[in-house]
Image 1 (cartoon, rainbow, N blue to C red):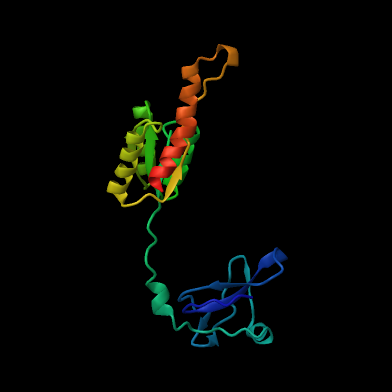
Image 2: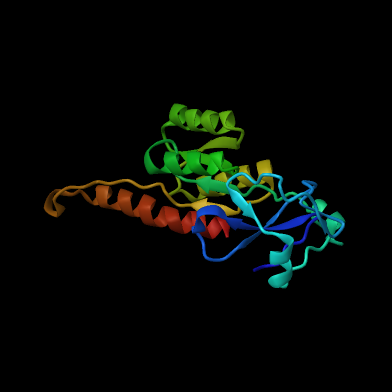
Length: 201
């Protein structure tokens, strides 16, 4: 059983035998253990079985008041990651941007033509308490990619995650495909990934 530090510690075992090993859970100021003495054991524990004092003694576990209380209470807040999602105005890119934004990430929503849809994605992220901004640009163009990265860095100071999602298809029979259609796919789906990854590295 792992050791837990805190102002008050109690060893608890899940009811119903769902897990073989007992858990140690941390309780702050709940009065299970106070100054080394176990308080009234008749106090109910919802869905859990409280271990008796004798069980603590037999298993060799001692409840210890943490000396690092001041340290644990002053942990620095973790900064939200900054994420760029290319092609994020619709489809898979939109779903990824929304999931990351609602999870607390700061999201740059890249789009090529769908400005209104990209704005809607940003509004949905912001409505859930997240931060987002849009950037219109073609990721197959180096200047656009550089401007996109600069926009994120100017707004939030860094780029932590890059999701290379932007892509197109020009499906058709090879014998009927024009060279420009082939080149469009290569430029966006391959060169775009190369440029975004290189510039953001």
